[in-house]
Length: 410
Image 1 (cartoon, helix red, strand yellow):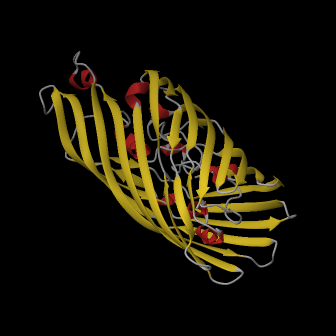
Image 2: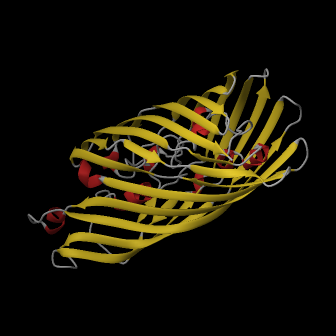
């Protein structure tokens, strides 16, 4: 029905809500060096955050290191269209990332990372019909734990392997118009879906050094499925609870993508390195999301077609060791959007992006400091045809990212 509420589509979108920097559902690049060199982070990544980007390079650490590298995200979206106007509030978010790792011997290193590979929250305020056709609050929380081993196979070849264990929680809140449903002056209710689950996957990487100045890196992170179980609640329930709140079991599943990356790096001088990266992300796994619950309400459907597309990410960048202990980083990266116009939703305000990043790092003795900034230039989305015509309109998106990291060697 064209006039159904957007709850299932919204829930699908909420589960994949980041839509900030990387394509579709991924969080921004992890870690401070990773953000500063976002388009060039596979071949030459050389600190403990290599666990997240290229674990084959972890074996290059000379001593153990622990680091905390949070990323601060400022993200805003505005909408004007068929259902009125809307804008997001509470734009600041934080993504914590922690890494620890180091050598076991001359040829083997070990480590573990705790990262937030997917997630962020979106909170909308709007006028007209907008508050009723899109969720006013969506939130996805993920914490991925990534134990890693890195091996020096030979003087020119390094291998990294790891396990991903990701805990995730999903929450969605949507206004429900009881007055419209019952043809009365009854106050609105709120449909809320909340669940959590754990997914498992693996990752691997190779770094090959064909010459002293060249590196070729290949990275792989497997697909992961997370089954969410929790509660679906409806406030002011006039159908099943006589105006009180009702609760039902909720189950759904999110299929996260396979990601394959390739990086080529070249050392121009003793102090300047350049690198090009490419990634393929298998977002086509996300073809639909089904909301499984025994609740049945008018205007709420239970299956949301998504039909996302696989994407490619391209980047280039480099670093310059301009003084003892100091390094400057610069990169450019282009992200495709996997979200077609027909299944676009305000809870995944995603578009093609061009991203410019800069960073600076300083290391002295046991201490390392890194700071990075990224400016995300989104294309506007003009949605003229959508599975829900009420979501057609003009969307403008803006994002800024800042990461500050501290590392301690021991």
